Amino acid sequence: MDEQDGFDHGQLETLGKVFAEQLLACLGECARGRRGLFGDVSLEDERAAWPEAARLRELAVALQTISHQAEEPNALCDEFLDLCTFHGESHPGEPRLAREFLARIERGDVGTPTQSERRPW
Image (cartoon, rainbow, N blue to C red; front, side, top):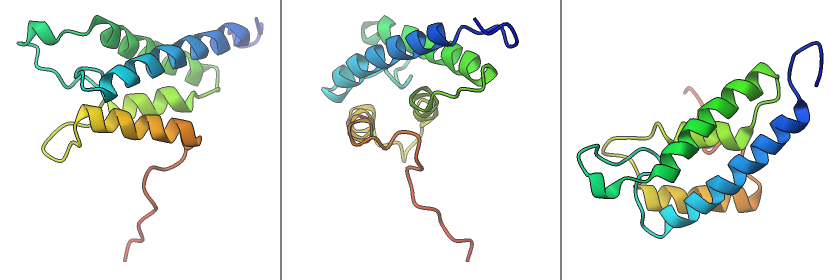
């Protein structure tokens, strides 16, 4: 543990690996059609409850907080939480979003901008 900042960087790395493994498992299930990973399920639909996805989102929030405090941001976690904010008519749908995110992970594009920079003119 680093006495100066109070963080054990080995534990932070382990937490990041656990998050990544859980995320990949949930993304695979979501890509096959299960909804709720990104929080896009109505609270009224009890049958659609996905407790693993809810725990993953909670883990992501905790990991993001800890990693940013340790000044070691986790790009995978940050991008996942950003995707959890997509809602509305232009939302591509969770299975498609999961497939696209999995493709970005496989290409090693996580942590890079998802869209090219637009010029202000």
